[in-house]
Image (cartoon, rainbow, N blue to C red; front, side, top):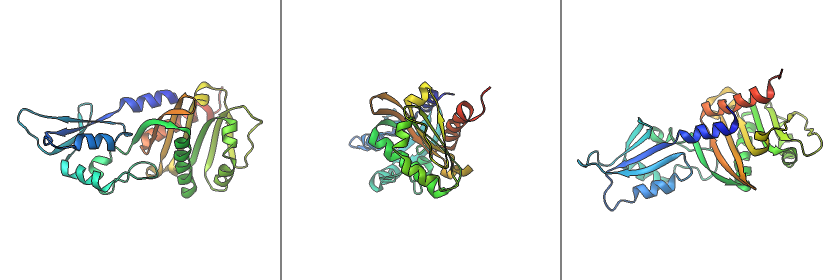
Length: 244
């Protein structure tokens, strides 16, 4: 599954958050729509003829119910702010029942500054774990060289670092960093930073996006171990393993 296909796969797995029979003066639906604007979820309100269930919010994937919680819990979420102001994913400690299903992917458009910020969050996690495998693709070798100092620091750890780019500069030579010069369309169009958590699902995280206009990217970041493994598996198969 190519990188663009992984993005489409994630997009197709969009969830639905249904607020059943909210009070007429309630703003819960619109508030949740704003709150989860970058999550891979559609928020809707639904009224039933019987008026039941009342005050219940249900999270669904296709016809499968993933979670059902009282509306009051979502009011508390909005008031308390479980979404991190910075960092990757959602802190679901107090709202685990429903947020465990929503923390998996944030799906939106990014500008270059946002991409750099999210990339650094993932690289910092790899630095702190001090092990595992990190894949980083910045489209062109020159963009990777702009991050030389950071990757020289990462190379002092036990992280196995693999970087990717279309050659547009002299050969990238950073001690402790494996560079894959790939004249491939998906490498040229994709920006990704993928960390396998040193085999621990709690630390797996990835950013994957494609450039749709100059310095405008569309994609996601995720803490879903299965998706992280899927991206890493594709990069292993396509670029790391020996080709015939």
